[in-house]
Length: 345
Image (cartoon, rainbow, N blue to C red; front, side, top):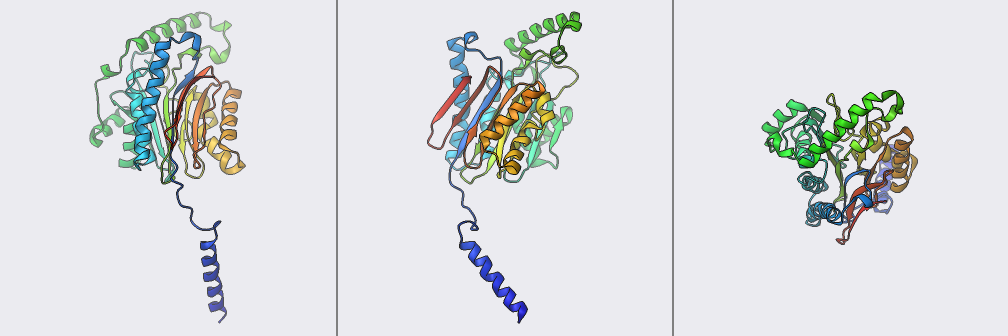
């Protein structure tokens, strides 16, 4: 009798909980939002021509519209993030894909990552040289392998087997980036000659040699978040250096319960701060708002000596885009189709 009574009480409790608003499963709100960035750094209006500024804004707008069309039609946040980033990878203005900067050896080495906020599945690639759209390969790693990250030739071999588009390395060469490498090499040689007179944190790594990354965060109609990031790395980098972009939790992170995050800037500092995950954790464990968490993360990166920014989107559709540099290429589009594009502080 006692067991039966307990069972009846449990049934009543479960039924009551189901019908109470606080306990009943929440249905997706149907809201959908998407934000992108094209890198942060020394971006000054006085150094920008009206024509080039218009091109940057057009590039960001094209990426926003690409992702928005997918969300509007009921597509997934993953599809939207990948499509928006592919559009930026194909644009030589941005340091990803076609616009990738050169390493010290005169090569283009590409990194990318993508993460599903619903399942916490993730995929990343580092140091690939022949992949037209690294973000698509990152997604293939997530969905078609048992791994999270692949690098170099192995990643390229997997790309061929997975049907990801491969291109000749000459595709990535642009004259502007090549000249950027020549300038960086010259500055590097001058620094070597005056090493004792330079501050330690800038003696080997010029701040102006970072051309940023591209990234996207998206929320779909089903309430699922996704984040993706892609980069050509740092101009004049050596020794196969890899930054924060492909490291899940450092440059890229997504969790439906908290936020989707894509970072840009001086990668070493984002790795040391585990920046993207730190933003999520501050929401989950400290109860901070998205904006508060974003500001705290960028402050901590700055406190270590790093610079850059991030874009983040939470499950309610709130957006934050903090940065501590002179500018950051960034933009967002909301459910009503309203587009906002910003570059400077």
